[in-house]
Amino acid sequence: MRIFVNEFCGHPFQMELSRKLAKMGHPVCHVYFADNESTPKGETQLRADDSANLTIEGLHIQREFSKHSLRTRRQADLEYGRAAARRMAQFAPDVVISANMPLDAQNILQQAARDQGARFVFWLQDVYSVAVRFVLSRKAKPLAAVGGWYFERLEKKLLRQSDAVVCIAPGFAEFIRGWGVPESKITVIRNWAPLDEVIPTPRDNVWARENGVGGRFCFMYSGTLGMKHRPELLLDLARRLDARKDARLVVIAGGAGADWLKQRAHEVSPETLTVLPFQPYQRISEVMGSADVLVTLLDSEAKTFAVPSKTLSYLCAGRALIVAAPAANEAARVVEEAQAGLIVSPDDPAGIVSAAERFLQDRALLAQCASNARRYAEQHFSIGAIAGRFLEVLRPVSGKGELDAADRVLANGGGERKPSWQRPA
Image 1 (tube, rainbow, N blue to C red):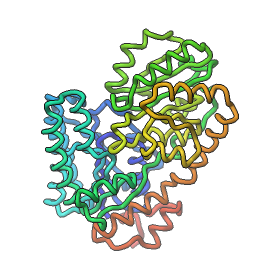
Image 2: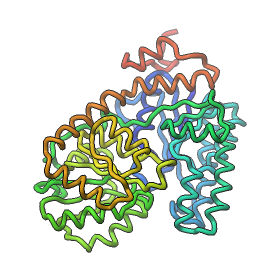
Image 3: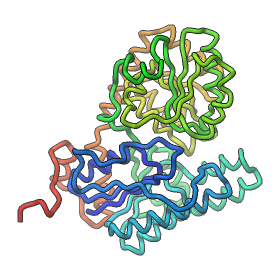
Image 4: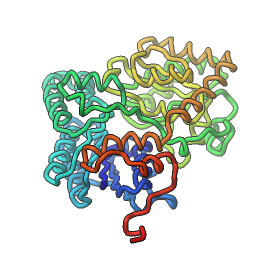
């Protein structure tokens, strides 16, 4: 089965899935938007252990891409959609999986897949139209109603026209059922993080020493920081830590929220608050290992359309978590299930400060949450089992039959199926 994976952001776990599917004998072309620098990327280069079945390509466009520009963003999205569609047609897949794709671009890619005779799987990472309405309500209120209506209508159409929809949370599945997406098309496969790429490391490591993070207790936020992530909560936490003088906050981020925080970093001591750009993915274990507690943030209004994937990498890193998010959000649910941290309301600025002070005072709780985090990841993030679940979706819609015995062996770590041209006649 030839599989084309389009993942707009270049996230690590989607690339791990492509790597695994390729090792299971399926030719896979994985593309992402190379010009989008607002989100951290995974391992985008082919590795020595990658299958000959795998291609990974970063696609470029001619125009400048600005994620937060209302004036130019849509044209850039359309151009990326055309670039992805051209590459898909060259690859001639049996099935297309597309995730994190702006809806105008998704529309182009879905139509191109139909013209190509390929099946289309919509991997629903965010309810995009709800997110657009949320952003416009804060940046351009007069456009919120019209923009929300346009994108909701388009998203409903694309979901209904897809051959299958993979939702990352049960709440997303329930939401789109209300939009008339047939139950038979919907599968829930929760997100994960790569266990072998994000591993627990000593608190005193090379990255920590290079960046002066040793010594004091360290809280860390790492990942995209938009305004939906409530960056003001990080400033509240930094102010409290500044008064205590026994802990620090490191923020490694990009996005509008990161820019906002940089502008206000002077309000606290530089020994307390450090704001850094995204770090090389190859050092992610050292980076997260430099923290005692890792922090997730999400605005209460974003609970229906966003699940912060950084939380899952935090679990792999084996550190205690503070999650300032609505209790109903999938990220909060996972951390609570794992017993890996403390959940607080994003609408209560005192909550994140209280949670931080609890970890500072209760080192036994800190150690237990850290241990629980990695244990949960190891129990739930096996890429073999996850790839097997995706094949259970892909095989029927692509017309390639059901998951066979060989697929199951390979999904469970049984070596690699060689490309057809390498097999004996």
